[in-house]
Image 1: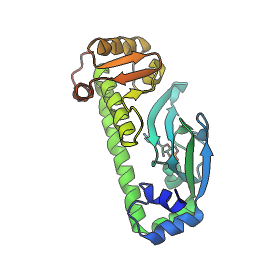
Image 2: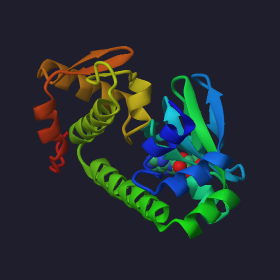
Image 3: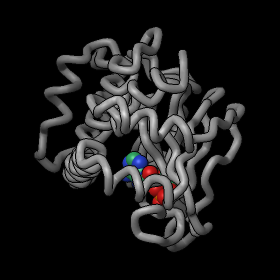
Length: 230
Ligand SMILES: Nc1ncnc2c1ncn2[C@@H]1O[C@@H]2COP(=O)(O)O[C@H]2[C@H]1O
């Protein structure tokens, strides 16, 4: 894919005039990472944002008590690194490549010039940030749900992301119990107990390194449940 096409596929540059794409094409640089590489490091200063052209990355954050929480997986053609660029601050989270990943890097000064000259790009950015807030609100609600509903909510969200990204077997989620604990506030015992229950009910099948969703409709219904029984 040409660099122009890579830019065109990014949600930041979707449906913008050709001159905006050409301006960006001149200033972006490409980088590749292997699975496991750290792309952005929490609390480091950030001068560029990254358009994910290929691959999938994990966003995580270490909070008080040094517990690591997974915030999101971002698939191509997603955007990362905009927060530090817009707030002139530090990286709000660590981003690690989950697969071989290619990004296009755009420095703050170039980005700022493009934003001022092309309101369509600014609009796309605003849309991306609004979508992020909606997603975070969903997650906030999910964390207030009982563990079963919270797990169903997380699993259905991951399934949907993988389906949209065209991943083979989107229903087979590569998650261990540890991975799941990093996504919801629950102990290992609670996660294991609830997973066993969901497995017995035929909703999903658990192995040490994966969760296969068997009844997505039932899981979606469960993910909307806000009763507080576990
Ligand atoms: N909840 C989230 N969902 C998706 N991406 C996020 C989330 N929180 C942080 N990020 C991304 O992770 C990046 C870390 O570096 P920045 O703070 O520059 O920009 C951040 C966002 O692009």
